[in-house]
Image (cartoon, rainbow, N blue to C red; front, side, top):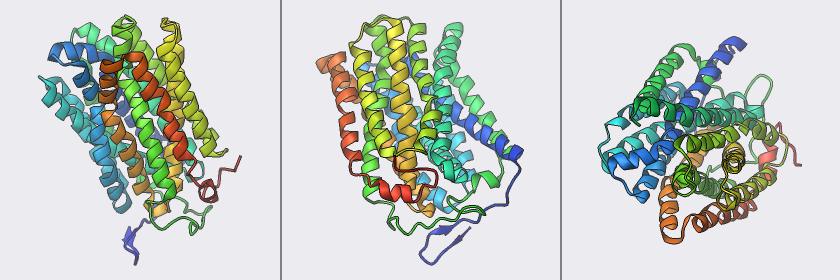
Length: 420
């Protein structure tokens, strides 16, 4: 890589690699993100046991459940800076190492303070990886970047689906909530070694919009990465973090304390959220073909309705499973892939790292306090009213922000999309 006169980095495109090598590399990167998701999701269904063991209040539990995303938010912008200026592969490897170590030391927690520190460490690594892997995959599969990010969202969904079930099963068999964290932390370190050995620069260092078959002009995009579109989409991402992680952090607690679900039923309901997230693959495919602003508006309407039905329905297990699935496919599956994609499409190729950092910081910065806010609202006004305001009304703010997004600029630099 070299620097141009403006001071930005010019990344040299690596030599082409075979389809098999690309598939292996992509598979390992995707697997690392599955483990990233497992590390995040296994905490939620085990929160009642963790609270009892460590003597935590509901508000403290809610803060721990989503507070790790503060680390992700803090890592977002610095990671974007590193991604735009240095090789992406070392950033990916360091990020996986950090969150795996954070997961491994979680069982050492004896109270709120040290547990918060371990969760923050995990979040720092997960935030670095979220930015780095999003840029890596979106740059390599540039003409179908939303579909590629949908694959990433599907990997998150898979981890979200299997993590709670496997983690709860291991904890039940061993009689300790600590056991799953040891297993998943070691799994992350193993995948890190495989990526170091098997993933080539041809995948990790690809340049967005530049190649033998594609050379697009980007003069229509603002010179600054902080522009009308990215600011509006940052607000949208922040609302998504407040809604989705507020829901995700305390939904199992609501099921067990209010609806009296068993630990297995609560874990299964949480897994259905992940199953819905797997449909990110479909939403990414669709996002490359339609007006993403309109698609995102529909997404937030669906999120609002799903949340309302989850907390105001019959309370039967089947009912909760169905709308946990629709919540996952809207708030995670569609919003994650499409908001992330539009943000990257709103900046020039050498700024995609900054765009990914803006998304990570906005999304996870809001997520960091979402569980605490939801818990405090619940204590003050009850579960249903708290869910109404934070999960059903708040998405209206995201819709308002989306009306400020100028899709003409985005579509001009999106070879696979059209204005539907």
